[in-house]
Image 1 (cartoon, one colour):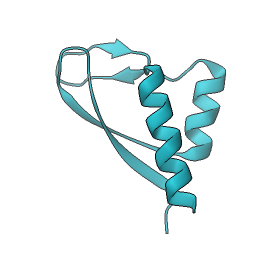
Image 2 (cartoon, helix red, strand yellow):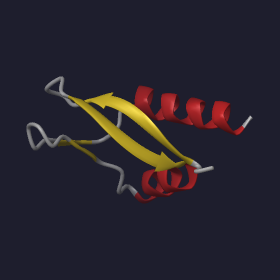
Image 3 (cartoon, helix red, strand yellow):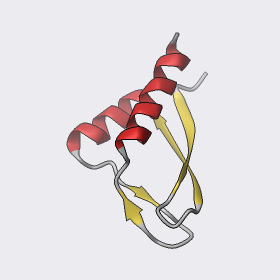
Image 4 (tube, one colour):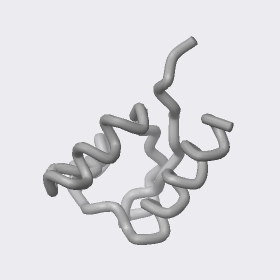
Length: 65
């Protein structure tokens, strides 16, 4: 069983994207400041919102229970 999870996000131009992280990868990238999402449709990069971060953490917690 993989500890990686898929998350559906939307870029600032409203294109749907899927990102995949393990809890460790997510927290490490977040702490280092390296967490930036990329849209392959419109070639836009953006940082995660506080709402996205909270949702990711919530899903990781739910998945580990």
